[in-house]
Image (cartoon, rainbow over all chains, first blue to last red; front, side):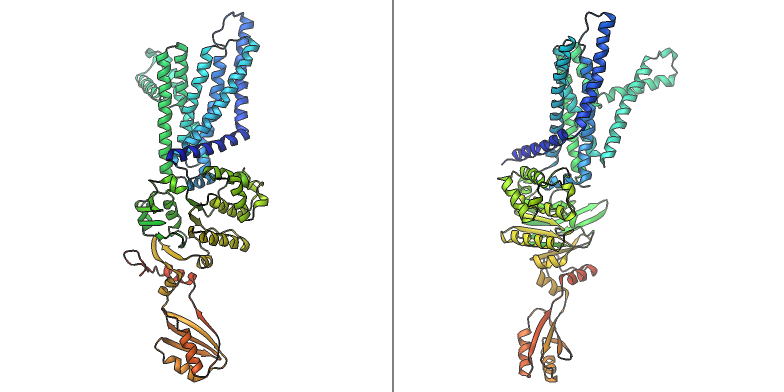
Length: 276
Length: 315
């Protein structure tokens, strides 16, 4: 049997076990419920807008609620993938897997597949629920809704790869989560500060503040290539513009980002080792 | 089956394993001994490709692990000192997971078979979180046997087991070996190693100090053999005659009990018996007192006594 066949079998077995564990756990249901709850608040707000302001037309009223649901689902994935490798290393089960026909590439791929399959399941449920809401509210679901749902899988791929990379670098599950939260908060803080500084008039700013604005803006632009959430924003903007080349380039960028991060995760797992 | 050449591992300037040359033949039970921190686990981890050697080569089944990783790993069964299990699974689910990983044929039949061997068949549907330490250890052994590996690497296989469990594992080791399987065992229970292993390697401070079969190993650390003889009645002629023999180093007696010290290497018991008879004595019992593996191990490691030549062979 070829190396690829051995690897494919191991990926399938590990991913199946993890999917079963996810389905039997409570986390995914809490995340989905939270996503629907928040999304429904936005749907309700849109409904209110229609009834109170007498709006006749609303462009893609379900797209933003879906976006919110996707962000919550993806954040759950970011957390679980960030914990996954580090937790299994902490428990020692990772070492036992590597006694057998499992190597770093196999293991990271299995974890990635498990998370993506989980997300696909989540997206199918999202689409079904939003379809029912669409029928109940008469809010339309057009091609852009499905395009966004499709693009969200790429976001999930980017986020899972990001989480797996953090998980292989960190020494424990707790450290992984702390690092993830610190990074996400840092991304957000830099984005907010850049927004504030950019909104200020240069005439009212001191020279130091102008230099700070340039520096923060450059940092923010750089982070747009590091933060996985930025890839969804880029994709959604492209879908909104309806320019095929931009949609394709955002898909390509997401895929490249995912592959690079997964390759780095494999390298780090190899270097860091699988022992506690 | 296992061959390492010049295997070395350094961690931050500290040499954990130093130029290790280990050779394990097909079908043998090899005991890998050493005090805590000697480099045993690091060596095992390198054999399994889980630690990268700083220097040296490893061959399993005559092949380089990096070249034939999956092929080799599917022929090896590994039991570690501590059992890390998926505690949300039952024993049956746990073994099924590994049976699928190794693509075991007729997995249900095989799982029942290995659970029977370790006497856990009737507890197969219990969650592993409720298993005792000994049961977990035995389940680990079941996992090792599941895919019928040609090489079993066992790190402290009998730790945390009661005497019944120790015997069960010993019986499994002997059964597997009788089927032609090769076993590489690292253990601190030297009496078990002495009972089961054909050859042993002793590692200390990362260096292999000795690698030989039990008899030769013991002979190398002691210059004399002690023979205890119980006579019906002692007479001075017996003692006098024995002292004159070239192979006898000393003779002492206490009542009817004689202690004779001879050079190691040859068995002189028949000759001693003849001398006693020719002097009118009657032998009630005669026991050659051998140094135990534990004593040999202590002598070798305490004195850092290398019994290997530069080529890594037993001297």
